[in-house]
Image (cartoon, one colour):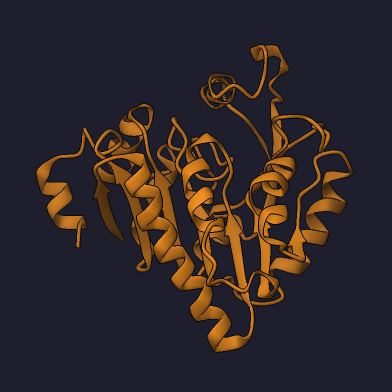
Length: 252
């Protein structure tokens, strides 16, 4: 794993998007297609703006999966991650092959369908973030590091639900769903390359716990330290609590 710290979230987004675009173009050059995973949430806004502005990616050769979706949320809801990806990525660049998780149908059927698609070939690059509670996708602590399933139904903890409220997706905590479908830790780690985008001071405690504490289900994103081709992009705010020793050890 490699940590890169930029001065602010805009520079972070630009640097991460440059690497992401290169990974996508390289996959297309090698195999004719790029299979990617995209994260959602407020922390990804600037990154996706930079990535979708790149004119050198043949987006018709890209196949998209995403990490998670709330149970019971229609695609028209402002908090829907399907809506998020359609608005901020798919429709902007014209991605034709995408596998969006529906939280409205039978979860077992939804999981079976998307599992068959994601297991059909390797994922070239995954774009992920880290939650304020250290979650990776919607794998809240204590996360399941062992399941071999590709997607599971999860219960969202209070810290996760408060983060979604704080980001402005819901009017009150009682509106935030308590359940979701999430890509599993093991499935994320199968990606050939992982680019983790984590701006803002509100993520600094999670960053410190995940990258200075033990690799533990209690700090789900700490598992990224076991993946040799992971690149974590921080800004000065999200990296503020990391020690100089940690930065020296994990930075290029």
